[in-house]
Length: 436
Image 1 (spheres, rainbow, N blue to C red):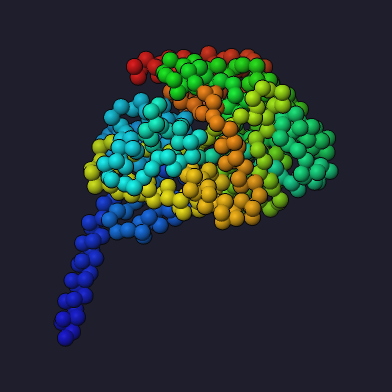
Image 2 (cartoon, rainbow, N blue to C red):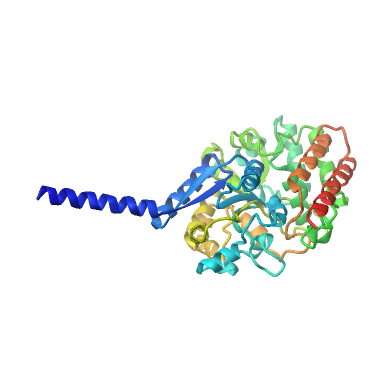
């Protein structure tokens, strides 16, 4: 009897081991750490627990730039992952990487997945599709810039925490009051190019580049040195000189200062919600990004940041089936709604937005719908549907360098933006020549 039980136990163990060995492993490289990294890990665990055919293994590969570079290097070595997270400015680079990617629409079609690209919010989906609407990569963590407000800091300076901050003119008046009361950091920002040039341009319906900001072809040219952009950057430079705008760094270095309560106003991604909600020991608001009153068409709509998930070429049919299953899981309404609510990233799908609204989340958490409304209130124009420019990560580096010269007072806004446009166009011509 004991021998029978033992034999049965061994056979069961062997069957389980066989099932585990039969699982197809899916490699997923991403750029998240901290709270966002934990939430991605939870999504992966949820998918792995939901079925037994596939096992997703998620690996952090550094920041956005480092993750993209790691993916490119891995492809050249024939060791690419199945799924690579790429930030939005890498879209043109991935599209031009012939033979390196397998479009999402092909992956889904070949897997026979129950998948409808029309479920995705148009202003997000359009960033990652071909001119005829075929989805190249799957939107995942899409955000847009908003204005974060430390209500306690305003109250301490004798300012009504509910004061109107919808325009930059009104923000300027509040900065004057904060500075007069001795506040050391009235305003700071994250991602200065993304917020104060790329989104500024879209929000005011002025071009950042020709050819519909690059959507119309590789022979585009940068034109973000126009009157609206120059006015805004010069005002920011003047505020920096007066100690009303405090520059913290090129990425999100200012986030720690805002979360610690050191800065009163902060322009940053809507996805700052996860960290601010968990760390801030003060009352805060999420407000729409300010616009310049008097500019025709403003406010239009802001554009997305964040990243999408690209499927890499050279994998097996079974791996692609697993990729399709995982991407479908991530974009399901329930999973995407939870991601949106936990992080502040946009809900991506219409169903996830409706589910969140029906749950009462927006009413219980005022301001969390701001990013969605800001993105979808108006139909995007050729100036406001996004950017698709080659070598844009490097161009952003040029912009950062030139903006820093404005903040230190070494250049006027016109001088800096003229230089950034000229230097950036050199990179665009090189990218065009390499991808004809």
